Length: 257
Image (cartoon, rainbow, N blue to C red; front, side, top):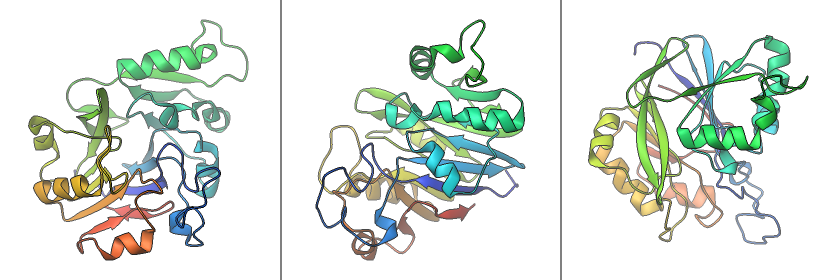
């Protein structure tokens, strides 16, 4: 893809965010704004379209902070609440755009959205419900408003999760394991974004060591870690220990590929 891709990190935290409610650890008490993390989400700008990946519970706050009212489509990685529970705030964007919001996700996401947001899928939805249209993500590359998106299958424990590749940029979150065939879909990407939860082993997320091993295997020009918990450590301290081409993402960071 020759078009430049712009990505803004709307949130880079794990399901609890940082600071964690009631926690007094050094990370949660840090005065470094990079240590304050909302739930993981990004907005990708390509071909004059803006594509949001995941609408978690902080979606409204994230869009306000970004000073952004533009969203042309939403991709969902999976159906956990920290990735879907802000969907109702699409209503404000519907009001501005006066059109349906196209959503893309797996069967699991579709079932969860129908259960939680049943009022938006009613045959005659009540006034004020989100105006949305769900699209099932296929096995192979698909089109989102003129942009080719390659789905990447990853495992979040036993749960299937989707990452997405846009040209030379790949975004993956909530991954513990990626099969070799799926890694080949990533290989050659110039910018890799992947989750790195904490220092210790975790049953359904890569820790820092495993994320670094993935970066070494896939060898992108640049890599950014996201979906970070307070157990990883302070942003400034951890970054000092990373290779030069690897950085911790932070809320509000904007990159281009």
